[in-house]
Amino acid sequence: MNRIVFITGATSGIGKATAEKFAENGDSLIINGRRKDRLDELKQALENRYKIDILCAAFDVRNREEVFENVNAFAGKWANVDILVNSAGLALGRDYFDEANIDDWDTMLATNVNGLLYVSRAVLRKMTERNSGHIINIGSVAGEDMYERGNVYCASKAAVDAISNTMRIDLLQHNIKVTNVKPGAVKTEFSLVRFKGDAETASAVYNGFKPLLPNDVADVIFYAASLPGNVCINEMVVTATSQADGIYIHRKK
View 1: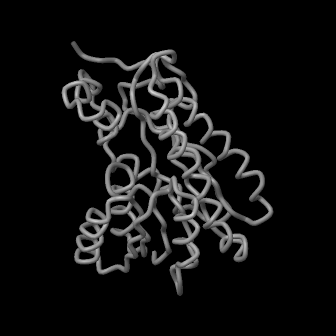
View 2: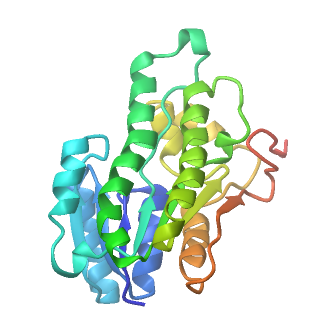
């Protein structure tokens, strides 16, 4: 399709699968993440396979100065982002509120909320000039259904929901679409990061049912991004068949 698609958090999980999906369909990509080696590896693989153009943007979305410095430096065709996918995000810890690590709270809010705000604001300068664009935020069912020991992670995804809704209202005058994609359980590095490398605990999250895979969510994102210009999907909730919402999962014994 030859659009310019900017994907944050593209080094793993949903972000990486989304990059692969858009590349497969001929779009040019700006891929972001903190791990430059992984970005370079993904760039080489996708360019070789699909013969598309890719720009690596290795920076931390939590750092406001880095975000604006890098985005403002996009030149030529890269300056005109058609689609932004805010996929960078994480959970840290699964603790009761009164026992939680406050550093974990700060990291989740800085990534899931501030990072999304900074990147969106930086990209919007050119989108509003063109009166065209689409911002796709990756929220979560956890932003709707609060669960025990989810506290600040749930709060961060509820913030994504509120930001997406108000962003959509404010950007109506600029003809810019805003979509909030809210997945349920997706088998990625998410749980391994959340439980800080405890592979056994992370794996147990998916016991007894078949969770979503990153490419399942990437398909949904691509669909939302590929509808006619007069059509905007405001939000999409996508779960595994065994999952009803952010709380109820049917697990086979």
